Amino acid sequence: MSDSLTLPVIHLQAANLAEGWERAVVATWERGARIATQYDKPDDPPSRDATLVLSVVDPFAEPRIHRALPGGIYDLEVYRQEVVDGIHDDWIDPEAGKWSYTYHKRLAAYRPSSSDEPINQLELIVDELAQAPHTRRAQAILWKPGTDNRGEHPPCLQRI
Image 1 (cartoon, rainbow, N blue to C red):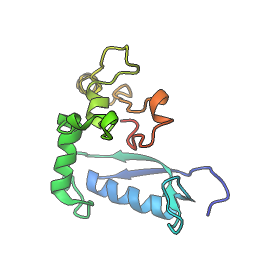
Image 2: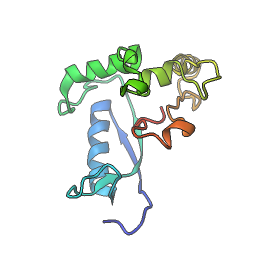
Image 3: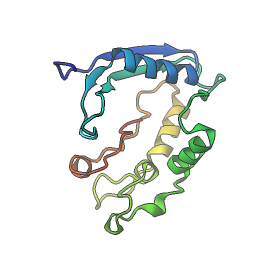
Image 4: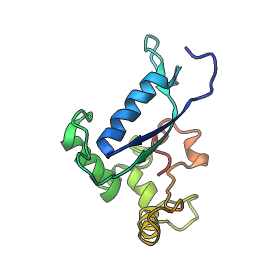
């Protein structure tokens, strides 16, 4: 166990996405801080955590998907459809014990508060990158402090 709550910062560069994913997993396992999380069961080993900055030289180079990706290609496609196309947005119904949000809804119709107009962050990212491929403005957030800090299942993906 780590005596400190300071997370290591890991900088990596990879030739393609598959290499980047593998290097990120291995580096986090080898150099990440060992910490207990609020999700652990009593006999679970500590998790590994780090702040990771990954630069991919050619994100369109093959292979783009690592062959050891958990769940495989089918689950990845379902996840892609969920995030990009919103195939599970109809599952949002917290009063009925269902989901309180989806990544798609947070990305394509983000509302900082219920009175705000929805913002399509995916569209904004695409527009920014089309104008300047190396811009730092092509970002989206999924975190809602007023909701997620107190929520039982806050989003793991917090920023793109």
